[in-house]
Image 1 (cartoon, one colour):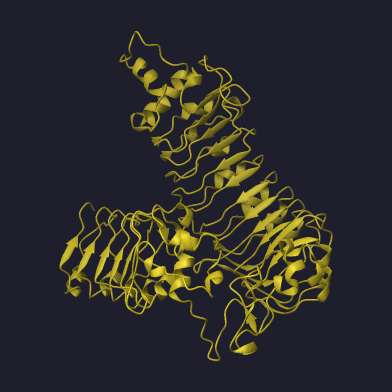
Image 2 (image 1 turned 90 degrees about the horizontal axis):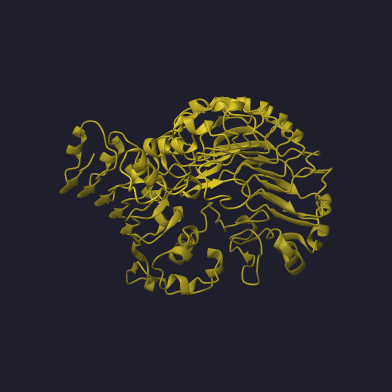
Length: 587
């Protein structure tokens, strides 16, 4: 029965260590003969994470049958899920997100005779396989399996021809071509596959997905052109294939006209290498010209004049900074509702800064964020929408210490930092580093910042401070930086969670990254000025110490406790003749 099935789940999935065990623990004790005879076991429908019947909440908390939903996300489940779960007669929704499950028990799925599953969420676990999912009932509409330990794409999902939503993101272990099999999943409405390692070109078979509304392939290693066949996805509303990260792929070729994508409102193709002019009659048959539309084409190589016919779109926000646009027709500079109304206030500058000027966002966004004259004229900013002023030798504009710190704060969630004195007060209304160009902030007094006599940042110490996200690569352009402590924060330096551009910090002597999600050694060999490096409890991928570590011949202190080191201690340690303190406990 349902109660026995759930007790089996509790036992197999490490129930005694669950964060919330209400009802489950009491029932398990009863089955083992450990229960309190004078204390009744709570009814199944009142257990933590259990919902029975239809509608909102527990329709009947006084029942032991009729379980329709299990939500045990973030509850410290581990190991295996009972395969009998998928035979529960009324179960429609399972959410096991953010646990340590290694086997989802999918071999227990028995098709139409089993649970009438509609939604299955297995994200943020340790799964390596989805074998058995091919037997799921046709009622299954949503499958989420982000952030697992897959090393091969689970092709069993191609049997789920009735599936409407499939999400598999942040599975960097998958390094293979984007499968053509997606083209046979013709009922898909959402296909979200960002931050994996899919390679090769985008398969033309995706054009068969004529019901698809959202397609996201950001931050993979995809190359080649945008297939014209994507123009057959008549219901597409959202398309995103951005490649911000240095290690991601790049799409090339021209931007297709996509005449028949009549509902497409959001396009994100930033940081690729699209070339040619912006096409005339882009989205020619659009049915959303009176709706809010957002198109992102930042940092491509689109050139020439923007087409005058874009004025068909009444409420367009279009990002084109960092391209090679040379002219904007005057009619577009009169579109009062463009750029969220900024065109009415700032004219053409709200779309793109003129050649010879620049701004952090490539356009004027407020009275304070304006298009500034480049001291090198059009030689330094030859195209519209420049984001930096470049000298005659091609040297880029160099952000100062203040702007680098501002960008760090904005990238890592300043509003959620535990300690932020000075930072929060000075940056309360700041949304981009460019807003502080003409301000002289006392950043040397901010929490965790220590400067030398020349007001250059020497030490940045923000351990256990609630930082989360990607640390701006410019942090390693702080020329006087000697010490950086970001330990016990959820921060990374690039999409691969490696050491990024640490080698650019030529004065850096002490680097503390304990208990951070850094998981690759790549780049560490460039930090040859380091004297101290600590990585205790970092989430490094298990394996031997890399050769490039031993390029750090000035290192005196190296700590890497509980950080997944395997194999034999390398003889290369003899190259680190300055080493005084070595701690590799717990490997």
